[in-house]
Image (cartoon, rainbow, N blue to C red; front, side, top):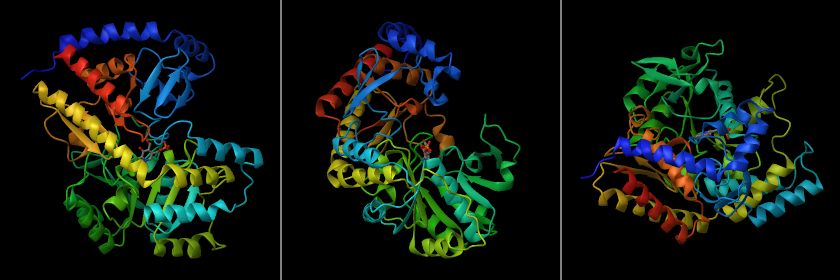
Length: 450
Ligand SMILES: Cc1ncc(COP(=O)(O)O)c(C=O)c1O
């Protein structure tokens, strides 16, 4: 059995950083210039989190490939954190968006597309009623707000270590049985334990205890954790979760933002789940900012009657650009041309090939590693088994020196992995040549560091 040699990892890391600098001189120049106008020289601080000497500046993308300002062509397994899941520059989305821009983007009036979007979302995800917002973060904030208004309860329950966007109430973790703010998050003058409770994912007894006093408005979380490593639900988890939430009058909100890649109709449809609301955003308008909340019929009925049509209530969740003509046009194009069963077949086929390639390479060297996978996304777990909770998954690499080295190694050889956890997200545009390239470079990396 071979193991990872930390000295080799350090040496490869140093060499690859030099290679990176040689290959990305124009990006460095642009980054240095942008420093004069933006903190960290980037328009969104996330972009400076990448484990490279400096950020890369993007020029254009086509299909599953991107080209940067230095002319480097890279197979993109990050896809803008799945915002461009179905590929860059998709002609039908480009045409739809360009046409709508020319006709008028955001008149604060409904368009005929609202009907087609609502019906399309119902067809794909199963939930019958929908609202449009500007990001998945906003969709989650509003799902929480609606839950509190409908149940007249204050608290929410989240999974410790899960991520639901920039949603303050969700930054709760369990620390030795106490609800604390996630490490590093500023309290922003609020006591998180007053608004939120936290349990480990898959901990049914913990959920039972947290909901027993009927003070919790909603359980909100991903149906499978994707942001703290990939953590799949145990076989009986969702059934028990639904039973407990129903029994305690707690609404169940499933965040499908990343789980959309699990299969056609997201995790909810693939696993036949029955949430009260689902939330999403990212790829649903091909990169145009969007957030969506899907509601069951009983929830939608109460929302319409008690909140949206009640003159005494200010829902406090409007947004000028939400539900714009441009968003609707883009969502419709995605639903009709990108989010198709055929594209899901392709994504899953390519994901099978990527997983098999990595598993072959791991097995050939007898490494005690495994691949965690959810539909079209997967990542290397530097341990023998996938985690059952986010806390457990924190010990499984992802941000280890080996993981950082793998990231830059791949990048220098034309493969762009997601920065958080080296996640590989396969778009339907990935070809067999692409999966072969990935397997070859992954093997070369392991040859160098074992
Ligand atoms: C599961 C999940 N929900 C919500 C969000 C928030 O998405 P956005 O940052 O686009 O608002 C994210 C972002 O990564 C996410 O992973």
